[in-house]
Structures are given as structure tokens and as C-alpha cells.
Image (cartoon, rainbow, N blue to C red; front, top):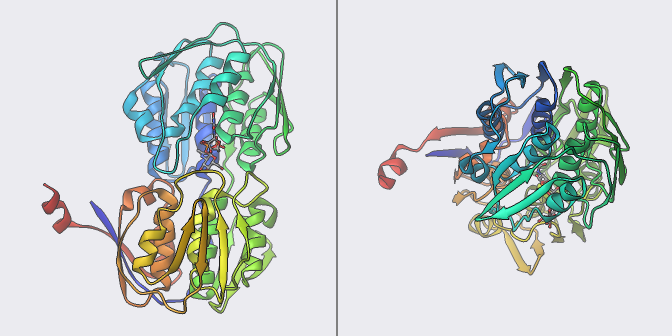
Length: 426
Ligand code: UD1
């Protein structure tokens, strides 16, 4: 078991090259199985969720070679259509592979992903849409069996702009017959990156980033080389850390437009934000302004994946902030841990009322999901004294070298093997 040890109160100064986006890499890696031959994808973050996706591709018969932050995928030998339960259990977004496999005209068996620590996360929208494209789908004993006859484009209107469902439909219709129109599509930048990759491979996708995406099927996709966009949530996490501790950090590879509502929220919270050539600069004296009302919404609204980190930053604001989580039911799991560090937060349903305090104190805290873990790290960076953060494996699912990155900015942080804890758990 790993633990993260932080001695707080250091200000952060320096440059960060923001890692490649986790949520763009995952569907693009799935898309690689649509291309015949070798496809090369650069700027893939070194995180455990990517490791799971690469293993999944290997199990399906793809040849996967990793070279630093680049991955070479050859899907010519794709021969297995069963996605093992363990892989789906480890990473719910394995479901994204479904659309791509159906697009290859294969019958697929995949276990039902069920809920996860942050919420119920059903996949009804994915399945309803794939059925509309002509897939024959049967759910039995916790498994989904999909028979792929030749898929045909359709007019699909999503009840909610689900990111994963939009991506699954795009993947399934990339080589389908005719044209698929997705209405009320998710508008997240990661969908634009998926469109960029697919079009580089010869697909005909348009409208990503708007609420109507059109995919005109092509007979096959060729291989290509593509570079993944920067991770806007990792960038936002380092911004929240810098504003909380004070300092001056340049985030290379991100743009104001790319991070949208995160930029505006940091400005509203009193950070000095500047767009410069090649990136964004944040400067802060560590004084955080409260935010009257912050509500998580689908893009271009404020992202749920930044809610725990911003809620944590607001713990030291000069006044009361109200944060409402509307996307996932169970995304306040960092709060009980923050209370141990001296935060003053109460919750009413999906709303957190955060009264700013002047000091946080080091404590032993437990991360129960990825972003809650990131939130605890930034709280520890501001806190007086030492904190120990457990549940580091969650954090490593989405952050590439988070301790090294923060150390380079001047933080006193390290991730270590917790030998005592390991013995205790034997
Ligand atoms: C993706 C992101 C995740 C982010 C989320 C919302 C990836 C790998 N993950 O997850 O980091 O937090 O978008 O921005 O990109 N829903 C249904 N039925 C469905 C699908 C979704 O009810 O069939 C609900 C979910 O339970 C949730 C909401 O829709 O309440 C948003 O989910 P969705 O946009 O699909 O998120 P994911 O694609 O799972």
C-alpha cells in the first residue's frame, strides 16, 4: 500500500508541462482498434487507467508497444470479443470499447459495469443508442451480449449529454452504413479530440464541441499519428493547488478556451490568471475569495471532475461558498476527510456549504476516489504540519507523477510504500 506524505505551507513556483488528457486518451485508444495497421498516439499519460486500457487492447489481440509517452497499436490481429469482468470492474470506462468493437463488425460480450464509488453510472443511454444503430443487444446474468449485424446510421437524441454515450455512438458509427446524427451530444473538449483523431484516420465526423455531432460512415479507417490534448482537469488541479498555497505557476500546453469554466472560476476566486504563449500563468497571494454559488454541469458548465479540488480550495476562502454537485450522486467523499483537517463544511443533499477558515492542519486522511484524492493532496499542501494521505492508488489512476510535478514546484511531498500498514493488513 502506498501513502502520500506532505509537509504543508510551501508556496508553489515554476513550470508544469501538463500531462496528456486521461479522458481523451481512453476513447482514442479504443478508436485505434478501428484502424487497420499501426497507429501511433503521442502524449499518453502514464497513469493506471491507461495501463488498464492497454491491457484490454492486448487481451483483444492488439499488438501494443509503449515508447515513453507514445503508444503504437496494431489491431490487425484483433481476435477476442470478450472483455474480461476484472477489466470492467477495474475501470468503468472500459464500456467505451463496445462501440469500437461493434464497428469492427464483431459479436461482443462484456460484463455490466454497474455503479462505482462516485455514483450509479448506468449505461442505458449507450445501449439504447447502439440498438438504434442496429446492434442486437441482450442483457443476461450481468453480461451484455451484442450481436453486430452491419450497423446503420440513425438519428439519435440523447436524454442527457453523456460523454461516454456520445463517444460510444461516434465509435460505433464511424464505419457504419450511412449517416448518424447525435443530438444533445456531450460538448466536452475530449469529444473534439476524438473527432480529431478519427478524422486524421479518414473518418467523417463533424460538429464535435456542439450539441449536434454528425458521423458519416466510411468503409474503413487508415492508420495515423496523433497527439492527445492536455488534461484540463490535471491543469485545474495544479491551479487550485497554486491558488490555495500562493505562488506563481506556468501551465504549459493549456489554453483559456480549453479549460473554459475552470479559468473563470479561478478568476472569480481571486487568482490572477493570464493567457500567455504556450500556456496559462496563475499567480496568487494565497488569498481565496468565496464563490456564492458553483454548480457542476455538462460542458461548458463547471466540470464535476474539478468539484472536489475547488471545494477544497474554497475551504480557506474569506467567506461562505455554496457548491452544488448535479452530475454524480456520491462526489462529496472528500468532505469528511477535510473536516479532520479543520475545514468547516456542511452538506444538504447535493449541496455543500463551505465556510472559509484561516488555517487547515495536517492529518491522516483517506482518498476514496480519484478526484477526492487530488483534493486531499492540495488541502495538505496548504495545511500546517504533516499530512498522510492513503488511497494513493486512486490518485495514480488519473495523475501522471503528481508528487514529482508538485515537488518540482517546491512542495514537500512524496509517495512512499507504507510498510507498517502493509504488515498490519496481512
Ligand atoms: C465521463 C468522464 C468522467 C466525468 C464525466 C462527466 C471519461 C473516461 N470519464 O464519464 O471523468 O466525470 O464524463 O463529465 O471520460 N448517465 C446515465 N446513463 C448513461 C450514461 C450516463 O444516466 O447511459 C448519467 C451518469 O450516471 C451521470 C451523468 O449521466 O450522472 C454523466 O455521465 P457521463 O457523461 O456518461 O460520464 P462518463 O462518460 O461515465
